[in-house]
Image (cartoon, rainbow, N blue to C red; front, side):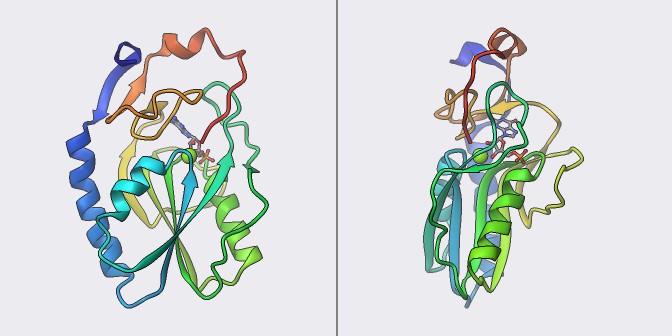
Length: 189
Ligand code: 5GP
Ligand code: MG
């Protein structure tokens, strides 16, 4: 697994220190409010688990499974919800957590669905990583761990064809790893 990593962008300790700060920001922003976290699976699983334990507020947790990557490292542009039910967020302040903001399509679709199917008091977005690229959908993240360039990253929850999620750091995948396998279908968030 380690042999497939071109270089490490953020070590585990760097990530966890940043999460301390991010959790403090979120704790301040939602003090006295009814917070519901909606974690977008599978990519945000590890990020959300580490972040939530640092937020010093009572909160509810819901999860949504979404897929927008269908093979390779390019977004297909199609966002598919894997479950029919939308979390009940009526009247709640919602914080949507995802691993990475890339084209913005996934988070745009998630926020739109939450607003359409319920009446949340507010919807904000928190991502571990934000790519410095032009978005296909207009979507701003309210809380961001790190800004990165336009590279395909893996680890700390992020996958390539469902692999590498359990790497403790965020790194760049070697080009040769996906160069030969773009034809094989995969899917993952
Ligand atoms: P968007 O809809 O913003 O284009 O993409 C969001 C989803 O695509 C993320 O939740 C993530 O699952 C996947 N994604 C986008 N960029 C990357 C990346 O660099 N690495 C990995 N592993 N997944 C990515
Ligand atoms: Mg994801």
